[in-house]
Image 1 (tube, rainbow, N blue to C red):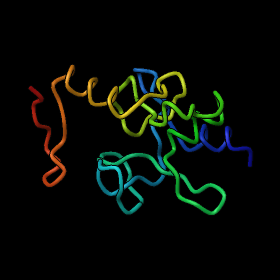
Image 2 (tube, rainbow, N blue to C red; image 1 turned 60 degrees about the vertical axis):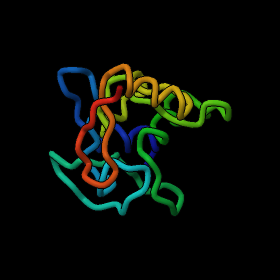
Image 3 (cartoon, rainbow, N blue to C red; image 1 turned 135 degrees about the vertical axis):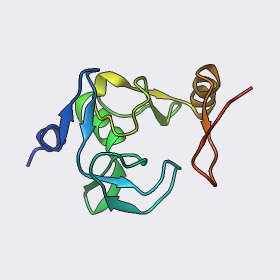
Image 4 (cartoon, helix red, strand yellow; image 1 turned 120 degrees about the horizontal axis):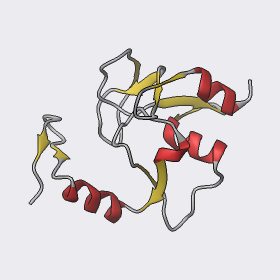
Length: 121
């Protein structure tokens, strides 16, 4: 099945225009975590099996609909702040620094141990 079609079939649209991934997610919100099947309220990032590897669905979506991720901006940032969103219109390449600036500007960051949102100062 075509990758774009697969991404569309495995997501549902919400009122904010997000394409919410209905497949596997990482166990937690951190960068690394075991993939597990979740429905609804999982806290992790969307993942998809492509070419024999588990990959972040947001990265796969960006590459499938927009093109290659620039080497100087290797992170995919979610403008909607929804980890399960795979809508390419909500995804932009960026840097770790830009991601942390966005986090700070919005007054949120997750504690890696507890997963709770901590205020940035």
